[in-house]
Image 1 (cartoon, rainbow, N blue to C red):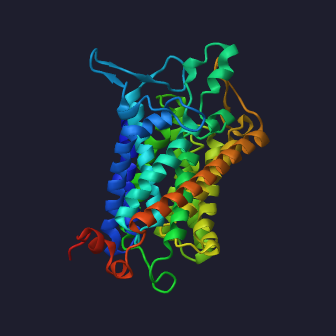
Image 2: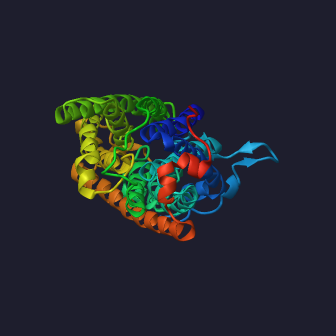
Image 3: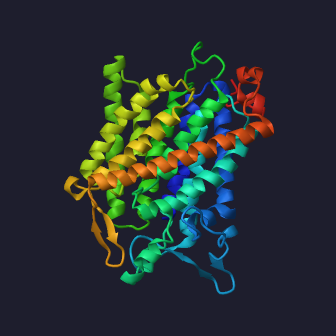
Length: 432
């Protein structure tokens, strides 16, 4: 779990920073690196102050409590003891501080993902204000609703099982499956990014001037590091070194490769040439889509989800993007929101044992698995997706509005034309 945590950290700095940075113009490269680096650090600190407590302690169905503020109770210096956190097997606890760190990296990268929709024109101060508000009122409740529960050791008596379940997050109680963050991370961030793109407006010259990536080499390096780090993201979400972790690992590997191929060949047919940008984007689409499914589907599911994700997300960044007419700069909505929605819904289908899936635990007292049926599970997944969409859209709108009222969202046109590297940070990514 320590290794998985380090791999997820690598997904933000440097992987996401390089992936996004290569996609912007030279004059804005440093601003993207700065935004990712500082927002990742900001959310990591807030996570340890109050975020972990609100997301992963008992409160109500929507928010946790405050018993772990400043990580209180995780380490007792008087006797040197450490608190333990639940995994998914009985009598198999994990040191809570390791779980805190693992989940911190999830929270931090989720907020950083949003930045791709709003780069090249947003004030750095507005980024920080938005990040604090959205993290607090969108990420934390969604994480609590989807992932918080007491753990399998709490289920000792069949007569009390319903009462134990009633202390869990709202979406967990529904029976929704999200192995590593389809709703919590990707749908949550993707919709927030789209809201930001609409509220900021289009970049100067968008649609009239060529706005091209300045370094697809950087983007390819970033995408490759994301793929590498994602094994910590998905396999690590098993919380144990067991068969489920192995299943999540191979599904992540396979679905991503399938998505690279489906995006590449679809683009080749549609545009006449396959592009490196398309291959890298296909990899991220596959990674996103398999995230909620990683340990929840079998090998057939990984094939299907990867192949479908490449085509769906390609349409999202081409046809759908033209329809909604938003300057989602680096296609966060088209890849993360659409990929996350696709993966979440397909998880409900391919979790079925008849389609090679493992099913899910239906009785935590006896630890027996089952499956409610494709229609029933798909409806549960759709409800989870819908709740996440509504919450993140509302919170993102309010967060951007507050930032706008406090400091303004956009830099001036003159500063935007000069580039955010110089106008916002007083330095350049390249001195040549």
